Every structure is written in structure tokens, then in C-alpha cells.
Length: 127
Picture 1: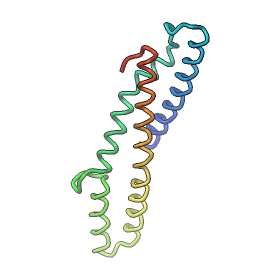
Picture 2: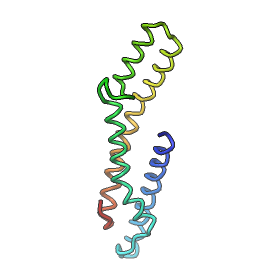
Picture 3: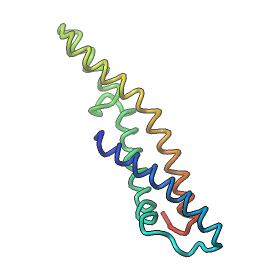
Picture 4: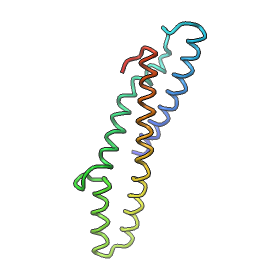
């Protein structure tokens, strides 16, 4: 999962710089009809990246029955404490802290993807 989100972040950064650069070049030439293929491919990935990010957020914020959610981890931590597995408690607590910190990153990614989606639509590449 980590690699795919790093790739998604990289794709978002490339898309932002490319769309912004293409917009400046089009403004200078007065033409908006030509969109580089790389920009078009990146723009077409935005809906999928948005959906995947929303799915991860839904899982993290899910109920106690959703494996990987914060509430699910709370239950696993309580179970480990009950049977005295201190190493497992520490491991799960660290995992929970990382997931809590990642919520802000994913929410920011959704905002960035929405902004890039608007720029793509303005460039004539639909969602």
C-alpha cells in the first residue's frame, strides 16, 4: 500500500507541475487546443486516485468490524493488554499512531486532487 500511495503522490506532483506549466505555455501562445499526452494521461488518473484515497480514509475511520480501522486497532490493543502481550501492544499502538497521522495527509491529498481535477477540466480534459 505504501508504494502505491507514494506513486500516487508522485503522479499528483507531476500532474500539478505539468498542468501548471502547460497552462502558462498555452497562455503565452494563445492556444489551448494541444494538451501533451502525459498531461492527459495524468488527468485521467485523478478519479481513480480520488476513489482510492477516499476508500483508505473510509477504512481508517471505519467501525470496529472493519479490519485496519482505528476502532479495530483499539479492540486488538485491548485484547493484547488483557493477555499481557506488551510487545504486541506496543506494535499495535505504533501502527495506530501512524494511521491517525496519515488521516491529515490523505485529506490534504483529496483537496489537491480536487484542485487538479478542476485544472484538468479547464484544460479541456474531462473527469
